[in-house]
Image (cartoon, rainbow, N blue to C red; front, side, top):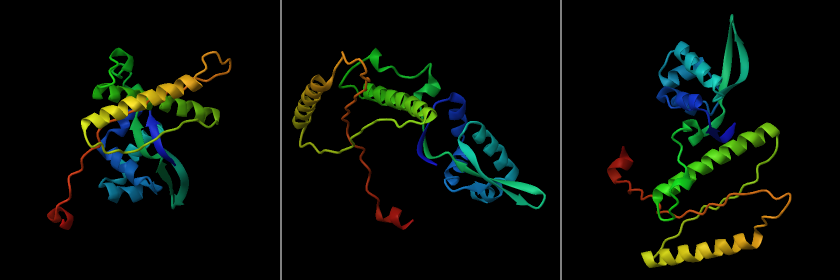
Length: 203
């Protein structure tokens, strides 16, 4: 089972957005049959089977094994991934295009860039998987606390200069067998998680 899977087709995205099917997918991190799933998700075995068939059609679950139970064959299923991300490719007509409004200070442009990463990397993963080849990628995830807005602006300026210097050093547009890579550097405020009160902790 994959840790993360990217859903690229609109029909698969629609199937995954059903709340009941999401509960089934979450439960199927561990392989289970429709009979075992039924009490976990509060449905009859027949209804669970209906949802499993739909999820299987879209590659969101797969067969692990078949077991004989008297005159019946019990199918044990498992989710294809522990978690899923829906690619903007599933909404091709509405997918954001970062080239339409490039603005380094726009949070919405940042979202457009992130959406493009999901779409492009999702397609690259599909291609690499089909070809049986590894996919080269690299990412940094860090957190920094700025004393004030001036420090944040100064950091952004120095970071941009450093990245531009590295790009100038290693970019070779004349390389015959060179392979283009996309580089995105992002900076945004961290989410503020409200502290848990004592009454909430006791519940």
